[in-house]
Amino acid sequence: MSLLDALKRVFRHRPDATTSVQEKSRAMTLESPVGNTEPVCPHCELSLEKMPARKKRCPRCGKYIYVRTRPADRVKVLVTEEQAAVIEQQWGIHCDEQENARLRSLPGFEQARTQLVQSLRREPTEHEVVLELANRDLALHGERRNWGLYRNAKLQIAESLRRLGKTKASLTAYLEVCYLDVNGPENVGAINDPELLTECPPFRPDTAQLARGLLWEVETMRQGLKLNPNQLRGAFLSAAANDHRSLNLPVSPEEAWRKLSQELSAGDVSDEATMTARGH
Ligand SMILES: [Zn+2]
Image 1 (cartoon, rainbow, N blue to C red):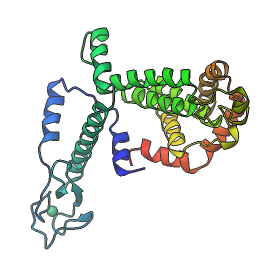
Image 2: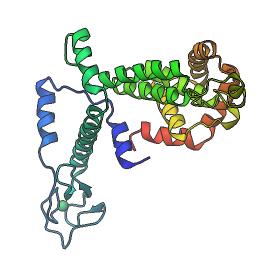
Image 3: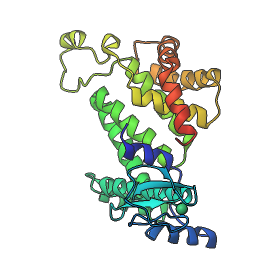
Image 4: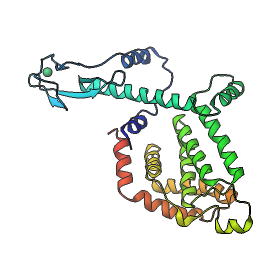
């Protein structure tokens, strides 16, 4: 996972609009440049011999000096721990803005936005529009039996729901992606010959793979929602039951759960998720 992704995850629940006075003053701090660009202690203003390359103690006041890069101008600065936290928040906002610009350039975005304005009677957020686009994609790829693309649309739905703060619905969608992945979804939209379809089936569990990032996401959400493994199992089975029926998937939900829970309990996934949930 890249640093940007890590930051985006840490700050994903940042509210979009700042309203209260307290939040407004916080927003102002977030816009203003933070830290010393010169080799000067951010605590006691002592001039240092040179710019430190990493965290160190000030020889005069003994407090820790942190080295960070500001997102606005990409300048390296010396900061206190509190200022370092502000810079991290600035990075979170910066990454969200980049992400939103990317979303606005998606095909069909403007058209979906206009339609949502009419149905919601307000301006939708970028992620509401993307959720709408992903739902359309899902229906389209399902009709065309392109199950790999269908799976990708489902992943986009999960991601958008998460960003909209709909954590439970998002977890359900991520679990559906896991279930699809265990079944090995294939794009068979171009194949109409029934004989060929038996050679190139729409789902191939023998090629199935569970992506590490996906497992990480599920584990992080499980911890965030404080679900125990048994509750997660229940959530998975009910999410999978729908797809098992409607898409006629070859791997049963129970069998898929065994595979998923095995992968989830493989130490490194849960350790990493725990670290992130603690804010490291
Ligand atoms: Zn100092």
